[in-house]
Length: 404
Image (cartoon, rainbow, N blue to C red; front, side, top):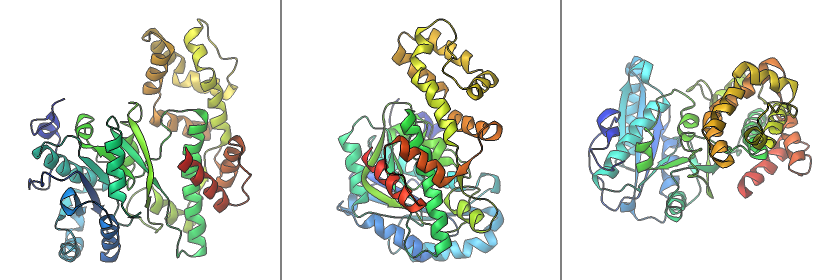
């Protein structure tokens, strides 16, 4: 597709905060949505990004303080006060109230990323990088530099997940326990997907992702979900073969309790600490059963008859209920070789569908397990030392993620 202000996205879907032009030298833009934040946290987030070797004219930081219109009376005075305080650090601080039905982190990210996209189009820079960050996160020094260099080194990379670790400092004992459990669940979930060979085994954390502007536009931009916007956005790219992981830097998301979104780190901590919901992880048997299918995937392409001998009875039942065999047949009939068959299958059976599989198996056959049990089973498969605590397991799987 063309890259300029006549791109179809700008005519049909774009929502921008203003049309102020960038300097032609700008290469990367960090976008920070803020809701129910305080000055100290936001200032810390911005200053951590500004610890960069890039020249001031090479990057921009856009902040959108947003809230639902139903909270206008209570939130707008605080938002304007925060805007004035932050304007001394970075000039691009906006305040906006959204209709309640369309408010939320997805909408805020979209407006910021659309604004960055239009400004890159104005200076004709299709390779400009849009970095997503959060108002309560921090990052390593030279974070902007490392992300930009990763895209410059790999001209084909369209989008990327960036390595992260939740900040475990200065936490009370129970909060420390819960955030370790939550991050361990995230790493166990992705670790199992990597182990069984799924092509979309990537973390999708909103504060830890980046995209090349031309690919942002071509893929239809950001969604406006109130939560999970990062999962749905990044998985637009994970089946293209041009998705990357950046591990030369790190993001440190906050470990604070929050009710701002219906799920995610803050909500998981809130529910766990209030006793509403224990932090668990998917049953290793669900991964193991699907792994047997993956190991014999080529047989589904090369043989003419059904090949269910290798499958568990639970998976056979799931195949039947979800018409998986018809998907495999359709992929086979439209593929010239196994590689194209495999690519077509994973396009149909994507990350969202695999998560639905895990949820269905949880409900019908294999309930969720304690996080340490799921992590131990994974560590055994990876030939790691069996962890004796959640923290030890987390340290092992962090190292695994860094090295993969």
